[in-house]
Length: 382
Image 1: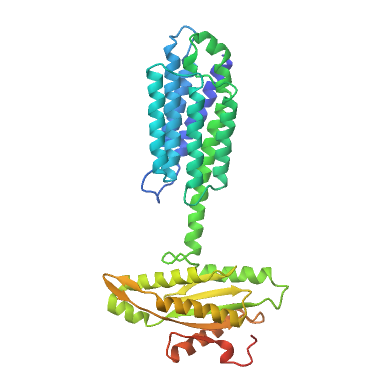
Image 2 (image 1 turned 120 degrees about the vertical axis):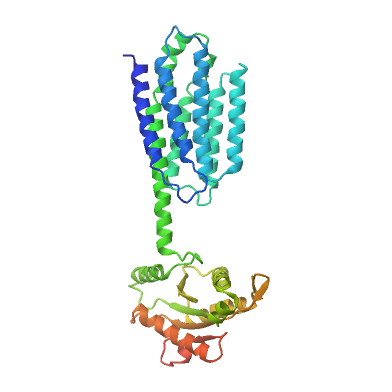
């Protein structure tokens, strides 16, 4: 058994493993699926390696052109899969164009010595660019994938001559084939591991977002709010005088909006208020959450009662000036706010209750206003 044959069989087994690992990919959140192209990549890789192991010195030199053709299709399948995953339509179209030019050069026999290397470099560059341009950016596993591509490309740079350039097939088998096969097991394994792990990391991030974010507003939910406050308190437990404030907000007459304009209009009002909150509050470390229904809570570290009051007033004014359009109807809405300074000797619920008392005062005084707890309880520490 020749070293070339042994390495080809080993790489073929890795490629078959890659086929099965690709089938484990979950793309339930994507309309277009990249999985078929990953599977095609590994199937073509296995076929390429089978073809390599079957080549003998007595074969026609045209068999080397077949090798280059399969290689081109294999690399293009991987690149298209990455582009679909990253939703990079323009880069996907560019890949189809590059693949057509590559195959055309092979068919008309106008290849250059560096054709394979150039084609690999361009496709790998498209993969890397697509990963960096995707909405969430590359995760840690994607960086491993990128390093695998660059490492394989560097290895191939040792001999950048296309297989089909060799007119003497015996010379290619004895001198070049082994060099081209050596990195394949590591390359195919790396691609399998990092693609599958990347999808798993994306799935974990998605599940974590579902567990911590309110789906309608994309703000923190109640659970994430309490976890974040607890983390803040643990990190600053030695700083007994660390200033923080709580702002509790409630959209005025929200039930009337639902009853008059419908629940969809109510949802739009909630989204608009969440948007105003996010755009208005740029304080470092501020935790903005949907506390429940039409109620929102902001935990603002490093803000005293006066600063928190001014921040609440800023949000209140901006929201009252905003307008929501629903089915050609313009809806105006206001919100009421209650503000309290965080007292470290009290638990979280007790601190929130103080802000809730201030909010209740704002509601009873006519709504669309901000009230501080210290204006109700003069013994409150501002």
